[in-house]
Amino acid sequence: MLFNSLIFVLFGVVFFLVSGLIGSKVKGRLIWLTAASFFFYGWWDWRFLFLIIFSGLVDFFAARAMFKKPENKKLFLILSILANIGSLSLFKYSGFFAENLDILFGLEGSKFSIASHIPDFFLITPIGISFYTFQSMSYTFDVYRKKISPAKNVLHFFAYLSMFPQLVAGPIVRAKSMLPQLLEVNHVSRDERWNGLQFVIKGYFKKMVIADNLAPLVVAAFGAPEINPSSMYWWGTIIAFALQIYCDFSGYTDIAIGLGKWMGYQLPQNFSHPYISTSLREFWSRWHISLSTWFRDYLYIPLGGSRKGKIRTHLNLWITMVISAFWHGAAWTFIMWGVVHAFFSSVEKITRWTDKMTSNLILKFVAWGIVTVQILVSWVFFRANSISQAWKIIQTMFAFKGESYLGWGLNGSVFILIMILWEISFVLNMGQKVRKKYPFADMVFYALLIVIIVFFRGPGSEFIYFQF
Image (cartoon, rainbow, N blue to C red):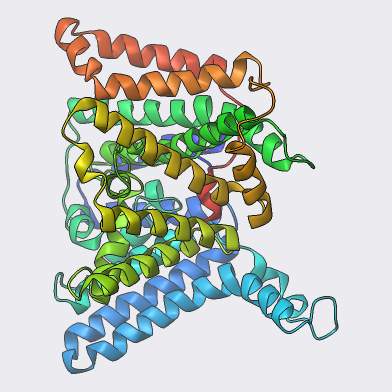
């Protein structure tokens, strides 16, 4: 079920009406939240409800077993990891591994081809599988480390695991922060309702106006049979994609956070203006924060982090970045995206060049420019249909040749300009200054956004991260 669909609006109205009738009854709220979340997820394909139920039951009972039999807790943790990574591998990566094994052993097109023998059902990637399996595993990891106690009630756990606002595209919520909230009855104040509405409106604006209007330009560029020979065209296209994926993904997160506030829950921030970063380290502290911290806490630090010497630090960094990239999708382009980020991050760590660019505003601006180019180059691999296409595009970008215009007309440039001005206003703290001077500025601003959403929305499409 898409946030930007009529059926979701109807679903939301029913959900909040029934929630109001249930009131402060905790058990009733948990039952309703779980049932509504299962309906929300099952709307796409009810068969995959069994997958989330399977993962949830394994982790719920594994965590309980760790608590009751601590001497065997490592065994139960392994069981949890195998169940989650196993289901993730089966549905998301089996086709990728089979195709590459066929290439390796020359089995393509033969009757012995491994890929041709995989049932079609296992080639469907269930929406949100990467998010809820990681959320579920973080629960068992934290129980194993004695950071939290296991949930006593399976309903309590499934309300946490399947909560619909963030179920299919994050943010990845930690049990330590969410499980206690689910047992509390928070009466939502007027300020919280207004704050939630602000998040929802911003989210719809980013998704429906910016991302959905830029999407056709990006699709046309990467789907063309021949690479456009203009350098300017490709710099513009990659900037468009960078803003598209940011507005699409952060738009979803904003809507989820806003819905959570209306429900009385606080979901974690997932994006914090990543494109103003002056280092890759800063970028990853601002981009997809819940995933970045997940890999930091459950992979990078357990591998040794930066505690075992310089060489091991870089190795741990590369392992983390490449696995994180592979999490995004089963393709060599995603892996290459991770390699590019790992390379630039290693160079940054070794030279500490970004630390030397903080003494004045001009140097900071130069650092921002260099880091932005690194990010844009990496996005080419993320979006390209193949590594060969990505290399051709990058070569064209840095050839600095061809027509000196984008060829889009006014449409694409306007939406790019809007987002650039949006980020500049954040850096200059203009919103806070205007609110101090004009108390009703917020109401006017969000009313204007609603009008723009209604009249200038792009062609509707599902959220990019649903495929992950």
